[in-house]
Length: 496
Image (cartoon, rainbow, N blue to C red; front, side, top):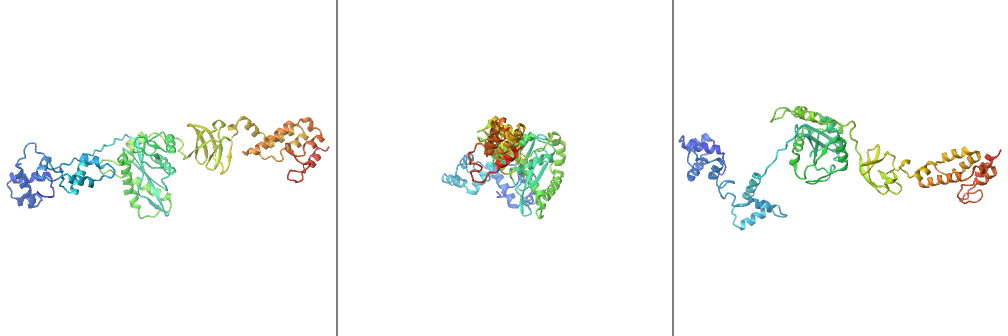
């Protein structure tokens, strides 16, 4: 029989022309488009098998192939050498086990075929047993997202290309960004929904490290910021299974189409800015969506407007703003650090583990999913404290600023006002420094502790305002030894 297998319909045509028409082999070969030797081999195999014409009842193409091609895969009773390929498949999954090793072991047991033929038979068996389930997509239900493998050079750097498409209409979106970081990933998602004009029910991304912290077949761990984005738009996120590209076949096809019709035509063009590249990508993607389908009527844009677009949910009023998410433990001073800045939280949460979200303008603190504090983003190194977060005694001390002490002392009398000025001379303005707050508290206690009657006497004023109360010192001098001119100023102020 011929080594090159010919179609079953042509074989039946050769047998019919030979038995019904009685044509010679040479003419049969000319009409059938095969060589004389092939015609001779077919008729010889047919005569040896005793098939005859017309074909017997029950003689289908598969049985005819086994009779005429007994040595081909699937032909004859022992075409595969009697190998149990289910056993081969199970054994090949073991660590270090290869088809070469299994073939050698089978040859030791009497297998007589070559290694190449053994591999062909195994691949044919594996392909025959493979099944693929067709995915069904509802209108406006699912969007598939991924990054393309091709990159584009922009000003000496390589830009990544984000691609997304609807499952039903295959309506595509593409955008170039610098990196595959979480900020760019979420930014692409936000602009993607604005391009579509609505929110789908489900987004199926690839297992990108920026979006999926831990990939898993059953319970993948989605990044916290990605979850916040999904909660803002009220959309579900279901990553694909690892190493299962068929789970996102729509995204794979969309990437292929974008690379073929958007990126490849611009392979020789040089872009200076990312905005310039994105404008060109937007134009070419629009042309891709308007391109008619080859196997069905309409285009991506037409099917999208008729099916997906009416089923989308409206976008929220405000778009999502990216937040840097971090975690910290509240210290005993009821403050937490975020990006080199320090912020206060209610003192009841001292020792608790809290979540901080920094969107560049505000810093929000959450505990167990509940917001407990919010601050405007301060400068690097700044300490931002809200009085409402302090315990009662701390808040009382914080309220007694040097200005308040002077005003309170001035309400009592001129001598007491002079005393208040002297007491607060070396006290700094209110700050988050505990030492400064302690100095303010000492000054406030000293002023409040001195009766107003003593301030009515100039001599008492002179005697009580020699220095900062609460500190032992020599007459008229600081501990450092420098002269203290306060006595002269107080005497002049108390003079009639």
